[in-house]
Length: 126
Image (cartoon, rainbow, N blue to C red; front, side, top):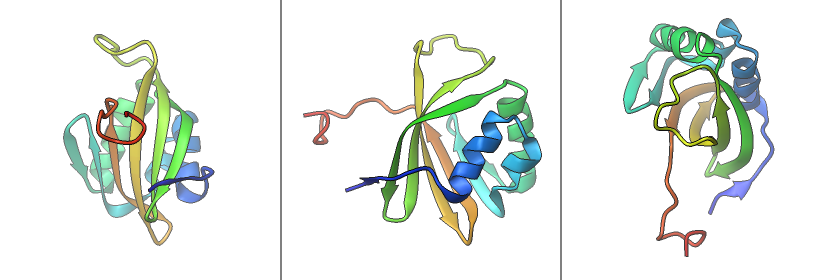
């Protein structure tokens, strides 16, 4: 079972950099061979991640307000409220996304961003 934790280390640095619209600082949180899965797309390598950050994070003024931070066997799950100037057509007024971070040697090696739905199968959904 995941346990609640505070936002610390490179994940805290990442969220702070996103909210500051700092491309270099955001990209600096990733390992050279990291990947991001966002909107059902896998973005591989730090240069591709840089292009994604520039266009879809910084250009769209995306901010993330963490509402829950969990540790799951060493990986960090950050559920956060997203806002920005991106196209919000079809999205809820309050967009909460789950961010699954895997970190090794102080760098993010993978980040998966998903808009989850409540599960009727887990304890919280019962």
